[in-house]
Amino acid sequence: MSELSDHEIRHCAMVLLRHCGMISAGEAKALLADSAWSKMQSDGSTRRFWRVRRDGFPPCIVAAPAGTSEKELAESRSTWKIGNHLQAKGVAVPALYDWDRSTGLLVFEDLGDIRLYDRVRGVGADGCPDSGALRDLYRACLEQLAIMQFAGADGFDPAWCWDGPRYDVELMLDRESGYFLRAFWQGLLGREVDPGIAEEFRDIAAHAGRAAAGYFLHRDFQSRNIMVQEDRPRFIDFQGGRLGPLGYDVASLLIDPYAALLPRCREELQAFYGQLLAPRLGGDAKDFFTSYDFLALQRNLQIVGAFAFLSKVRGKVFFAGFIEPALLSLQALLANRCFADYRRVRNLVDQGLAGLRAGLVSPR
Image (tube, rainbow, N blue to C red; front, side, top):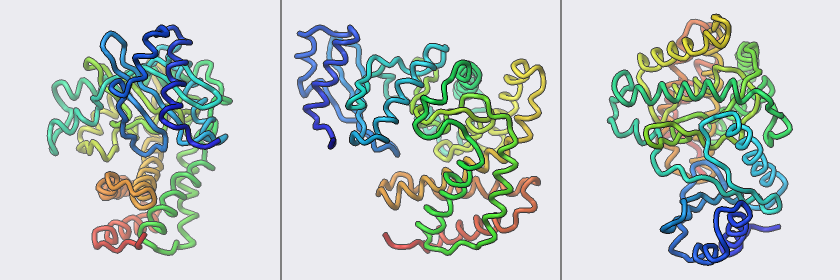
C-alpha cells in the first residue's frame, strides 16, 4: 500500500479519537477542519507528524509512517507496545491514545514545543548545567532515566522490538562503527577503509559488550528527544527501545553534540548517575563506570555516522553543523587511557576531522 494522503490520515485519526472516547461524532467533524491541523517537522525520522488543536479539545499529535511497508508498520507497532508498557511502569512518556494496525497511524499526547535542547541553547554557547534550573533539569532527566532503565526492563517483551531485541556486539559493529565507516568515512569523505581498522573496532565492541545488558535501553536518549513540560522531563522517540546496558543512554545524553556540555559538567552528571545507581545495584556501580567509556565511544560513532547520512543522503543540512562537534567529542574520548592501544581508530578520527575541516568531502 502506498503513502496515505492527508485526507485519509485525518479521517483515520478521527476514527481513532472516537474509538478511545476522546471525542464525539460532532467534535470529529469540527476537528477535520484545516485550521485544527498543523504539520510538524521531524528530525531524522521519515515519519510524518501533525499537531491537532482546537478550543475545548486537548491537543494531540498524530503520527503516520512514510508508507505501509512491513518495516514501517513494525516500527509503529513498537511505538504502541513499548510506549504503553513504559507508561504502565510509571516512565515519563506521553500517553498513547490509540493506534491503527493496518495503517500504522498513532495518536498520542501533545507535550508542547519545549525540548531540553531549547533549554540548553537558551543559556548560550558557554552554558553549563552546574548550577540553577538547568542543572536541576539534567538531574531530573537522569532520575527519570533510572526509572525507565530499571522499571522499563521489568516485564519487557523483546517481541515488541522492530529493530532488534537487544543491544549487542553485532549491532555495534554494523550500526555504530560500521555506520561510521560507511556513512562518514566512505560516504561523506569518500575514503578507503584501512583493513586493519576492523580488528580495533571489534576489540572496542567486545569491551563494550561485557557490560550487563538486562536494562531498558532507549538508544536515542538526547536533548531533542526530551520534552520539558512544566519543568518536568518527558521522553519521546522510544520506539527503538530494547534491552541493553546502563551506560549507553547516560553517555548519549552527556556527549550529545546538540547540547555540547563542558567536560566538568559531564563528569559531575556521570557521578550523580552513579550515586543514583548505587542503591539499585546493591551499592556497587562498578560495572557502570568500567563500561561507560566504551559505550560512550560506540554511541559517538553512531552519532557521526547518523549526522553524515542525514546531511549527505537525506539532504537535512541541520545535521551537517553537528558533525565536527561530534568528531571532537570522539577525539576527546579516544584520548582516555583505556583507548591507548587503538592507534588506527585514533588516526582515523584525526584524519576525518582534518578532512572535514578542509572541506575534503565527496560530492553528492
